[in-house]
Length: 233
Image (cartoon, rainbow, N blue to C red):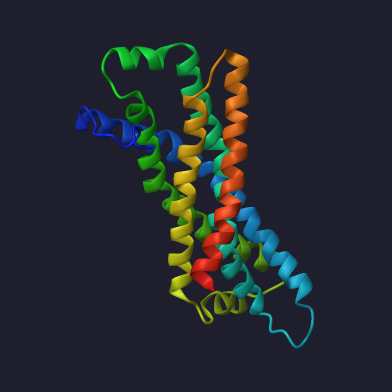
């Protein structure tokens, strides 16, 4: 981390690389985040309606369940786990391939801080764009729940909208964004570490990619528990 956050040789080059990484790691993930979020919201809506059949539970509780589930857990945690698999494997395999093909050594010979050049832009891009993806996921999850809930007839549009606005706490969104920032750092840094220290050939690149995804996923779950205890207790 000390080397990765070392002073850049040329700020303009690093700025361009950050925008490149935002395009590759962030914008390139919009599609899968959108699909997962919409269907996740739809499933939560249908399952909540099925479990809230008691006349003592108002129908608008379905909207409350979808909103809180997406904001508090599903968007920040589940989407981050998906990104750990997609983005993390890409980062580890890219840097690992550069290591085994001696491109990293070539950067060092040219006097370039290879850790900073390869890893720093990915971490910054992830920190900048991951919260955007999480907010995007929250919106689409609630929208998907609304559309499928109304189409299937398990909840009316008025009841669902009333549910998602009932007793809304803005702090929950702040809590989710804090988690997404921590998870973004893990998603970018852990696979980069495993890719950077790859040794061997193509087989080792695959193993480094797998290790990067596994370790980052475990750390996301661990920090999810820690942050929930710290921020919501």
